[in-house]
Amino acid sequence: MKLLHLTFSPRGEQSESTQLSQAIVDRLCCEHTVSQIARRDWAQHATSSIDGAYAHALANAARRTDDMPSSESLAASEMLIRELENADLVVIGTPMHNFTVPASLKTWIDLIVRVNRSFNITPEGKVGTLKDKPVYIAIASGGFFGSERSRQPDFLTPYLKAILATVGLHDLRFFSAQGMALGSEAVQAGKAKAMEDFTKLCSSQASNKLSLHA
Ligand SMILES: Cc1cc2nc3c(=O)[nH]c(=O)nc-3n(C[C@H](O)[C@H](O)[C@H](O)COP(=O)(O)O)c2cc1C
Image 1 (tube, rainbow, N blue to C red):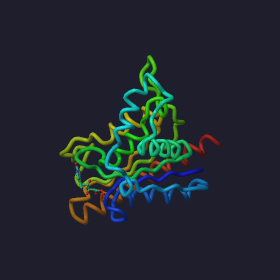
Image 2: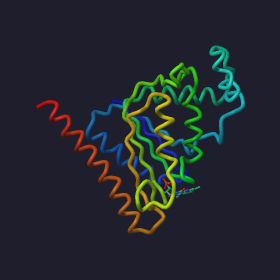
Image 3: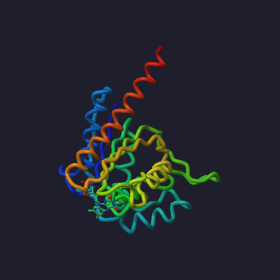
Image 4: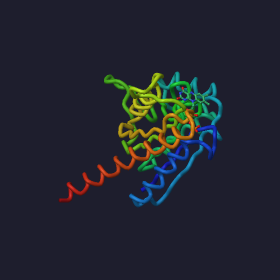
């Protein structure tokens, strides 16, 4: 199995979402025969936004497909889409920024969601061209979201569900270390809860496998 590990925090190795996603990668490597790991710390390399030639090409791509001018963004788009196509498992580490994805993850999305390449427009709506595969998403947030304790909206998880489904990725598994800005006890509790949720998912998958083979 080939695993693709993508991280989007500007905090480098200090990042809680990077550390959580790395813990998930380590566990997945124990449980699957992973032959190859590709790692991309997109926050460190991302261009600040897409270039004009790419935006122009996409705006016109619904009419013409074969004359996209070359651009840095188009080359990056092709490389990132191929990277996703080649992977059997994807692990994403991302912080929550202002209730949603950080700018670096938004730029990555702008590059991988490409009309006539990673999705087609059909009478039924947008249909993804990528083969579905498990995508593990590790989130770190300063406060809480998505529960009774939360005092803020969550535009991050619904957005990722909608946009990744557009390219054909529906099998998303979310894990979140929440309360990372609320002191060391909250940090420990938030990280422990995320790994507990991940362990639960692994155990339920293992027992499903056993019952299939029984
Ligand atoms: C620009 C910015 C915006 C943020 N917005 C939110 C937010 O909306 N909600 C939240 O809970 N935490 C927010 N935080 C806090 C981060 O989510 C938190 O520090 C998290 O642990 C960062 O993950 P990382 O360590 O992987 O970068 C924000 C942090 C930054 C830098």
